[in-house]
Amino acid sequence: MKRLKKYWLLLTGIPCLVVTCMTIEDVIHPGNAIVDSDIDIVVKIKIDAGAGGDHKLAFGILAPTSWNIAGSATVTLTTTADVADNVVTNEPLTVIPAGETDSDRNNLSWPASFEDRFGTSDNTEPVEWVVFESNTIFKILSEDVVNGTVNIRLHTGDKPVKLSMGYAFLGKNKDGLEGDEASFFKELEVKEVRFASYGPAAFGFGDIFSIRYTESHTAAAGSAHRGGDVYLLGKVKYEVDDVTNEKTVDETGAKTLMEDLGEMNQATSWQKYIYPKDFFDLPDNAVITEILVQFANQDKSIISKDFNVEPTCQ
Amino acid sequence: MKKHVLIFTIVSVLFPFSSCDDANQLKINADYPADFDVTYGIGQVMLNGTDIAGKFPFFETFRLTTHYADNKISAATLSNGEIPFSPYDFDIPDGKTACYLDTDALPYKLCVAGTNHVIAYFQNGECSIPFKLDCQEVDYEYALKVVLIN
Image 1 (tube, helix red, strand yellow):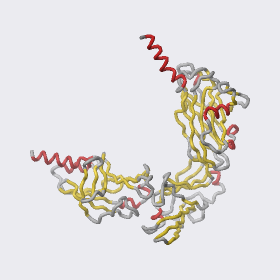
Image 2: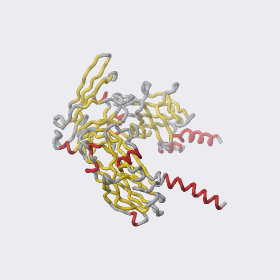
Image 3: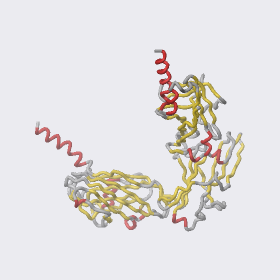
Image 4: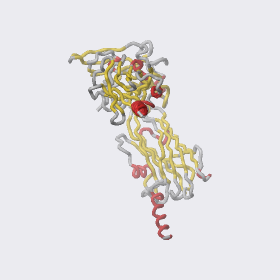
């Protein structure tokens, strides 16, 4: 019976050794960003006891090749652990030199190894894994659990793009232990310096929806926005009894005043919820076919180009 | 015995509303009249989980009054105020309209008499009116609050 117990313990212990010892616990990641701006990402990781071997941490980021994050990203690691040698604070992670290879992956280069291990999601844009490493050698064979926070600052490129960003980590050269790795992918849309967005994700012209105008700080210098309130102006095309009509709202007052949402990710946003028939003062039987919006200062000087509001309801 | 049956009946009827409107509990006391009105306004307007009540002043103009006779809802009066749409897919009845409370299942439904037109739902202390406007993927719900009891 005692012998059986021993095997039972061995059997139940194996999955931990090979599957669950390195995990990504949480990722704090923006869904949107603006071209040519910094974005901050936080990745919470956990290295459990039994991950095998004393090794450096290899941390990869999947990003557009054009962003050149090897030369521009800042990546730091802070950990908490019972074992003092496993505790680091804001330790910079550095790009693994190009000549180094992953002995656990047929001596592929580290970017190729990460691509082989984790793929590139469904990206159609040219993307690359850039792999960073810690200077600290973590003593993972101990019974310690290491909780880590990886703080990443990336600079987006100069073109709008929609892609899946990737984050992955493992123990560097850990002598063949499979399963000690974790990855996470998150969609990111990088937009122009001035853009309009709408919510909820699905809506029709007969719904209440929000219209949000965002302007990056990099755009602010050349912006026509004078720094005060922002107003929502618009034009609607609608049909009544098969006759097409147009109507414009171009006043700057309480009806069109947008709510200042403040600053986030180096941009400022303003938002207004509208029920289109009410906003444009249309008859009950009007069928809206098109809405164009633009954003203005209090004196009606226009800040932005026209944005075509496209309903997203299926 | 008859008195106990009466109290039990009154408590049973009012129970669904007890946490919805704590003031209603006062009506169980024999010192209070059995005929009264409870008027609701809109507390929150949830759009896919986000409260947008404060974004549109017209939501403040909505009123639903439930009329109690002998401690039971007997009628309701609805006013859509200045809201430019209706939460109902039926015409809002004019004036005081006979109603009944369907307690067959939770949430309880306040319906227009002689129809299955639901005016409001009552459950777990919430008085609500869920509805759709255009896109079926967008959920709206009024969470009502008591503004007047008389």
